Length: 339
Ligand code: SF4
Image 1 (tube, rainbow, N blue to C red):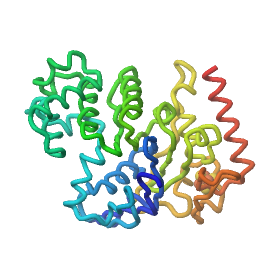
Image 2: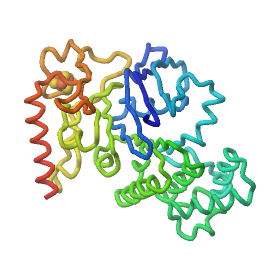
Image 3: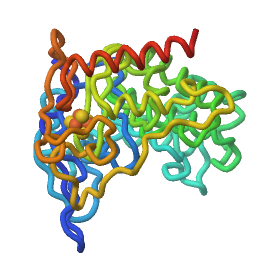
Image 4: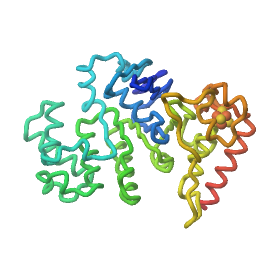
C-alpha cells in the first residue's frame, strides 16, 4: 500500500469575485522512500494541493476527495489530530527559510523546540539531536553554530537548517515546496544532492513541488505535471521524460535552459496560465497549445493511459501517432544537446 494515496482532490476558494477552482480533480500516490515531483507554472495548483493535504489552507475553502495517509483520510481529520501529524509524521520545507525560521531565536533553540514539542525529549537529548541534525545537513563546525541566529547563515545554509528542522523527527513524508528556487545553481545542486542522500538515510517519502523540470530529472521517481489546477500528465519519471505525451510537458521540456544553445534566448511557453476563476472550456491549455484542434476548445480531454502503460497518464486529444512522433523529436533534441 502506498504511504499517501490522494484521490480526486478538489480545493475551491470562495472569493468576492467568485469561486477559484485551485485544485480540480487530482489523484496520485506516493510510495515509502520515493520522491514524487509535482511540476507546473505558478498558479497551477501544485502548492495548494499540498496545503490541502496538510490542512493549511486559509479563507473560505471547500475541499472534496481523499488523502489517505497510512490509511487515515487527512481531509476528514479534525484540526487537532491533523496537527499531530504535521511536524512529526509529515514535514514541510518552503522556498524561503525565513518564513519558517524565527529571526529572534537561535537555530539551536528552534531545533530543540521542534524535538521537544513532538517527542517529549529532555533538554540534553534535544540538544544532542539538534547537533546531530546540523551535522547531517553538513553545516560546517556545527557545534559552534547552535547559538547563531538565522541571519548569520547564508541562503544555502539556512535552507540546510530548514531541512534539518524538517527531518528532526524522522517524518514519513517530507513536502518540499520549491526548496531550491531562491538559490544559485551550484547551491541548488548541493541541496538537491543532500535531500537525496538524507532520503536514503532516513527513508522518508518526498513530495517535491517545483516549476523546474530540470530539478525533477535530478531527483524524482514519479512526476505529476499540473496545468490550471488539473493533471496534464503523470507517471514514472523515466516514462514522462523519455515518452512525454502532452504538449504542455513538451513546452516545459523545450524551455529547459540546457536545450537552448549558449547565448541563445530561452524557449518559454508563449502566453500565461488562465484565470482559475473562469477557466477556458474544453482543454484548459488550448489557448496556448500549438497543436490545438476544434475539439480541444469544447471537450475536456480525459486523463488516459498511454498504450501498454497503465501508470503513464495524459489528458490530450491528439492521436497517439502524433504524440509518439513529437516525443521522439523532443527526446532526440535533448540527447543531441547533452551529447
Ligand atoms: Fe493541446 Fe488539444 Fe492536447 Fe489540449 S487536448 S494539449 S489543446 S492538443
